[in-house]
Image (cartoon, rainbow, N blue to C red; front, side, top):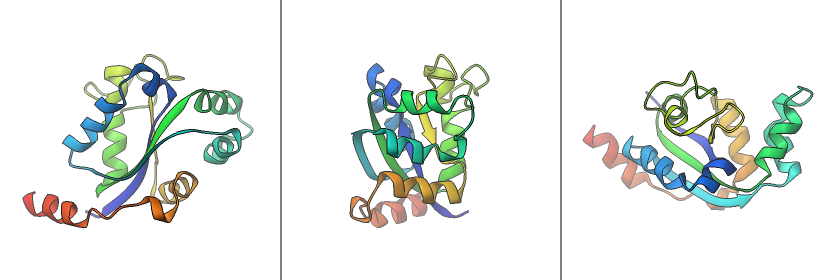
Length: 152
């Protein structure tokens, strides 16, 4: 297994409902490290860049409108198989089909308000992390990572 980095967003609905801390706690209990994190209000340009793969689709404008509707928390998560692991922890996009115990199954109500976003591939993670973070935003948690791997 490889050590990976991925983007995870607590979307405006998670922030407004006050469950960002619960989401972060689940990530940390799973053993993932947060190596960059910030709360921000996303502007339309950055939102369109983030959702560029959906441009032209009927739901694109709704995605942009929602993600810019309030503050969000952006995180870079690091750990073994972090991309697949975070996606499993988040659950399926539709909370009605998400696995029991996942974030979306436990907290989300609709597919349009599903609380979190996570990169779906290495390529997406690289592209998305550059949208939300600058190189100086990342901190080294090498000691924590080595301890975590050793304890496994």
